[in-house]
Each structure stands twice: as structure tokens, then as C-alpha cells.
Length: 78
Image (cartoon, rainbow, N blue to C red; front, side):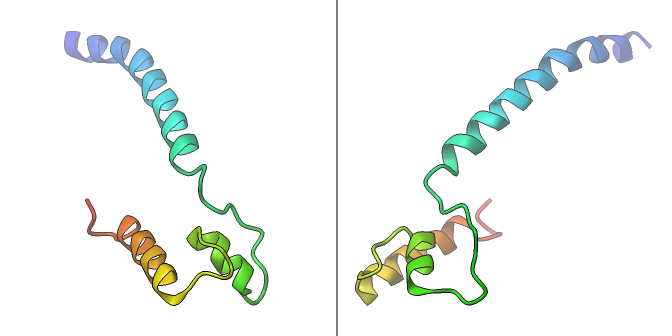
């Protein structure tokens, strides 16, 4: 019972620290991504915004950007 009370007293500050860190991480890491307002059919402009390249980018630059995003979002990343 002592360990339960001790854990309960530690939980509040720990929960607050985790919440603040999560807010900071999500705001910082996702700030450079296109946040949406997606159209029914994806246009070249919208695809370039999502990939982070110019609409007139070449195939090599588009493939590199696509690969980077796929690697970042891969479920086996860790």
C-alpha cells in the first residue's frame, strides 16, 4: 500500500512533464508538413506541398522527397 501511495504522488508531476514534452515535440516536428485542406482529386500543387518540393520539381527530386517521407512514416522504423 505504501508503494501505491508513493507512485500516486509521483504520477501528477510526471504526467504534467510528459504532457508538456508531447506538446513541444508534436508542435516542433510537424511544423514543416502540409496540414491539409485536401481536395477531392490531388493536384500537382497539393502533392508538391505534401512532399515539400516545388510544383516544377523534376522526377529525381520528387522520388527523393517521397522516399524520405516513406522512410519517416514506415511502421518498422522503431
